[in-house]
Structure formats: C-alpha cells, structure tokens
Length: 632
Image (cartoon, rainbow, N blue to C red; front, side, top):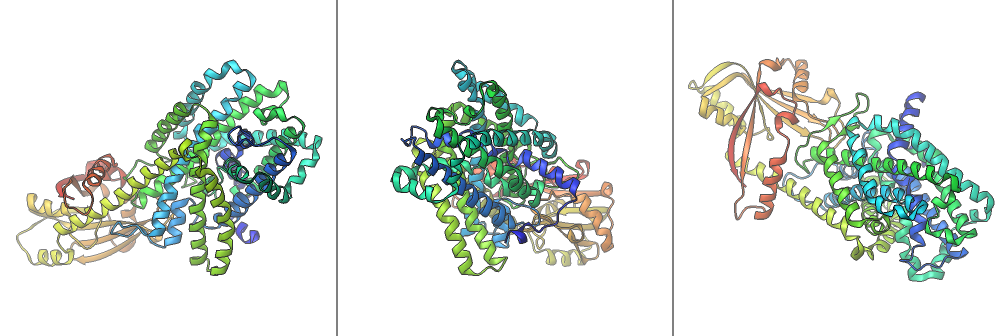
C-alpha cells in the first residue's frame, strides 16, 4: 500500500529539498519536541507507576507502537492519502467524505457535525500545544538552577509574543528559518539517545509488543491510565495532515520516514536506557541525557525547537480558518497570501492574535507543563477519532474500498484511538475540561453562523422577486430610464432579484444599459482551475448572469474573474463599472427559526465580518452600497 500512497507528483530535487526542509521546520516541531515531557509524565507521581525495568520496557514498547500505528500507518500512509487536490485538514476531509457543501437549510448532518467537532478540537489543540511546548522547554531552567523557577512563565510569554509577531512574514520564510534549527534538533536528540542505547543495548528489545502486553497485565487499571501520558508521544501527528496544503504530501512523508521517526525512537530508547541505569533521572530524563557542559545549550536548542513546535499548529489553524470561511462556517476574515509560489501559505491576522491571547491565558492559568498535560490529551485524541471515522468514509465512498476492509481497518485504528481517549477522559476534572469548553464554544459559533446565514437567505428571498419575471417586465416597460455603463450586482441567489437592485430602482429609477448579476459559489474542492472559473449566461438584452466558482482554499477576486469573461464575448472595464452591494442591518425577533440568543450572537458575528468590498477585492471607489433592514 505504501508504494501506491507515496506515488505522487513529486517536485524536482531542489524544490523537494526545500519543501522537505520547510516541512521539518513547520510540520514536525510539535511531535518532534514530545520527548521533552512524555516519559516524565508517564512515570510522574500522578500515576504512581513503579520505576522498575519491566515498567520502563513496557512504556518504551507502548511509545514505539503508538508512533508506528498512529503516526506512520494511520496518518502518513492512510489519512494523507485523502489528498483533496493538494489540501489536507479536517474540513478538507469532511468535504471529501460528504461530497457536498453544507446544506442550504443550515441543518447539520451527522458527518458534518463530526467534522465541525473535529475542527473545533483542532482549535483547542492549537491553543494548548504552544503553551505546553514552550513551557516544557523553558522549565529546563529549573533543572539547571531551581532558583530560576519564578522566571519560567514570564520568559514563556515573551517567547510566544515574539513567535506570533513574526507570523505575518509567511510560512515559507518561517519554515526556511526554522528548518535548519529542526535538523540540528533531530540530530541532537537522536545522538544523545544513541549514546545511551550503545551503553544499554538491551533496551532495543522493547520493540517486542509482548513488553506492552506484560505491562498492562502487571499494572491493570493504572497501566491503562498511563496511556493518557503515552499519547503525548503522538501529539502533533494531526498536524501532518492539516499542513499538507503548505508543503505537499511527499515532502511531509519523506521528512517523517527519513529524519523524524528515527530521531524520536533513538531519543526515547536513550531515555529508557538512562532510566534503567539511573532511576533518579526520572525527574527530567530528557535533559539529563546531556552532559553537564551541554545542559544550557540543550535548553537553548529545546526552547527554539518548542517555539517551532507551535508553528505546526499555527499554520494548521490558518489553513482550517480559511476553509471555514469559504465553506460558510464563520464570518469573512482578512486573509493574506505570503507566497507567490505556494497557494496554501497564508496569514490571518485575527486568527493569529486571537490565538496568542488564548495561549497566554492558558500559560498564566496553568503555570506549568505538567498541569497542562491533563488538558492536552483530550483535544488530540478526540480529533484522532473523528479523523479516523471521516477517513474511513472517504475510503469507502471515494476509493471504493470494501466495507469489510474499512471495518477491519477502522476496528484497529479506533481500538487505539478510543483507548487513548478513555485514558484521558479521567483527566477532565483536572484540566481536560479546557479543550472541551473551547471545542463546544467553537462548534456553537460555527453552527450559529451557518444557521444564521441560511435564515438570512430565506428572509432575503421572501422580500425579493423572481429574476426571470423581473427581466420580462423590464423588457416591456418604457418607464425605466437606461443609463450608460455597466452595473454589477453581487447576489447570493442567482434566481432572485438582488435587494440592492430593487432599492436602486426605487430611489434612482434607472437601470444601466448593461446589468450583470454575479453569484460566487464555493465548491467542495480546494481549488477550481481558471478555465472553470466563470459561466456567463445572456438573460435578455442588456442582462447577464455570471456564476463564479472557487475552491475552499482560494480567495475570491471578482475583478480578476470578470476579465475571464472576455472568452465568452463579455468584456469589462473594471474602472468604468459600478459594483452594487446590499448591506443588511439585522434585527433579531422572537418566534423566529433560531433562538433569540442565537440571533443576537449571529448579529454580533455579522458585524465583525470583513466587508464584501475587501473580501471580493472590489475597487472601493467603484462600489455602491444600498442598505436594508432584515428581521431574522
């Protein structure tokens, strides 16, 4: 299966090297820094796990098989095969699984609800990961000098502010900066682990799954609960798929199999070898791998690596947010492209600064990575379960895999995913509630926006007229004066008269000699090629309907799309064209199709939306806005 999956349109060698380096710098920071805290949490006092050779070998076996099954087999070889024309992430997977965009009624299907929950959990992960990663690295100062404990939180906050401050420069530049650092990181942690493995080669026997079985048999319920810490070894695996649109599938797979996985395994084996020879190292098995002279340099490198770890989820949040905007799940946002070559590399200011505020709040509240560890696993394992389900649906519906094969594969993946989730569920009272609250709020906002837009469309349709009947009436009427020029009316419905046109007729009693109705549709694919961008229909003398199609990973640009109409015999001089937009003032009311509190929330969200002029890249000095009040 792997030969088929890895067969893809591979870039030339130079570009492949650059993309692989960028992937190391952006995608693998999160999972690449998990050795900082995973084994420490496994043997932490919370579980009461006895530090003996059998338990050490059992934990190492569990970590090894988690990396193989969850990351290598599931994400790298299976889930990343769900390549939605180059784009990854939970919403891209949802589009593949459902074949269609969300229903116009705004009602949630089961698969759509699962997709929204998965997206919401990823946002929770995006908030917790940077806080957890950077805190765990800076806490190395306590290992070197306990008196420095008081500076850990302030230093962490300062580092996070600096990280989010450079996001506007773009993923490619950030990846080029971070890639060499991550190569140094993986070589360092792999080398430190190898030194211990050479001294204690018996630790290699942990690859035998019987050690994992013996661990559960000996420790029972406590052994099961330790899975809540073992899962920390695979956190960040979901970023491989979420960031696929930034670098492509093959560079991400190549970086994992060629660099990241070998380095991680060597480091975990080295930590376990150290614990076998010196159980007192359990207080910080990662940092105590280093010789005394190398401790501070390792702390510095770890801090840089965990800053980079945050980049993986930040890039994923940007990609997910853009998809949510295009799929009608959240208000329009200002999205900036940061690369002329890679379309997936973007920067979203509101998402960037909102994420930073939430992360700083978590750092200040929890104060340490050990406390945050309780909140960490729920978001990751919940997202893993949803990803597995949606990927299996795609395998059956899109790849035509048989039901028995999908059920067999699903049973194996879900057995692991559900075990990790159940082990983390006991942490809910101790911090695990944080990502659940974040996810619940996010799902509520997405569902409210989606439902609100559907209700608004219904209300506007009720106040409008059928387009065909309107055009027939205007063709026979001699009362309306036609003026020179072109008027473009942006409308969400291609079959009804835009409210802006009715208001223009009412107040100005004129029509332009050429009237164009433009409807923008977002297909359930990441990108629509330029040749399929526009469809032009002549409705009557001087009346045209244009349908403009985009993928959910593309930004609308109406002036650019109108230039494509020349191929249909319809030419535009944008600076001689007037663009008419409707601006709705929304009024909540009782006894509507939404609860009153949701209507009010929808109104607030609508007010935060980027203007249609900016979102559709319309020339501001050619835009005319006509307002109307709409009761929801």
